[in-house]
Image 1: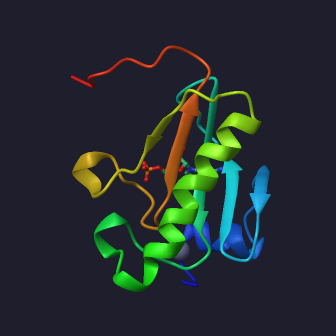
Image 2: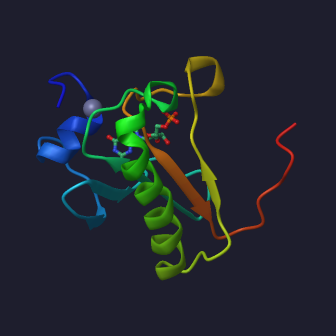
Image 3: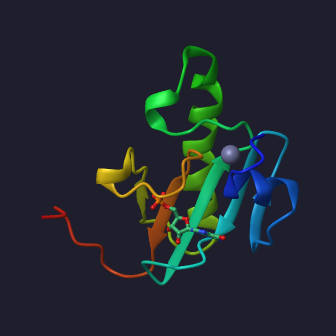
Length: 113
Ligand code: 5GP
Ligand code: ZN
């Protein structure tokens, strides 16, 4: 846990969030500024700063994170969804605690352009 990390603070309960799911390794909560009718984030409780910082020891938890994200999407009415990780500031990453965006509820354009 990092003292100055927003998502670590959400995990610790120091910042409120609308939680969807929690277990000993993962936490999912609705995004405060949704980019689609349904938009939630799923994060590891372990502080990993982003996809580039994933190590061999993290591979099991990252697999669980992606699978649980898709499962929670289906349970929340968006079986067809976009799963996104922004990696680095120029790619749109603003919170440097790894998170998977799960978006759906309207047609999602692809490619991004
Ligand atoms: P990024 O831009 O790093 O890929 O995504 C960060 C996401 O976190 C954004 O979609 C943003 O709306 C969301 N976010 C930022 N601060 C908060 C917060 O305090 N609570 C919640 N629930 N989401 C947040
Ligand atoms: Zn963190």
